[in-house]
Image (cartoon, rainbow, N blue to C red; front, side, top):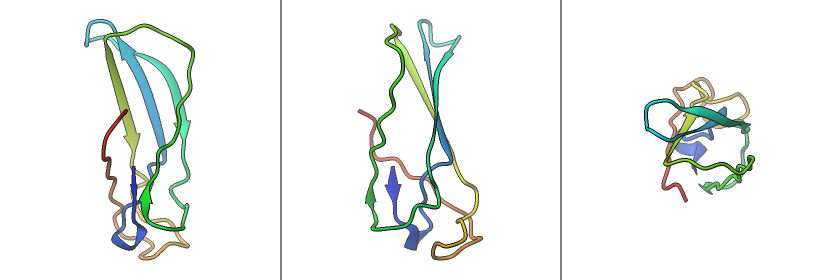
Length: 88
């Protein structure tokens, strides 16, 4: 995820990971909360998500935007953006 609070890019509130064998029916494997109010330097944040080993053909990653820039960051109350560079 890209964290650049000067440009209203915040971390997501949470990330949900689900897997599927057919691309139609997904089963959740984990919900991972993050801290969208985290300040600090801009940059790439690479959270590690751990869950029980499983087999699947498809992976669905859903990141929930915080909505508005949290208090304590630059531009509080403005619409927050969510940016993802790549998934590895």
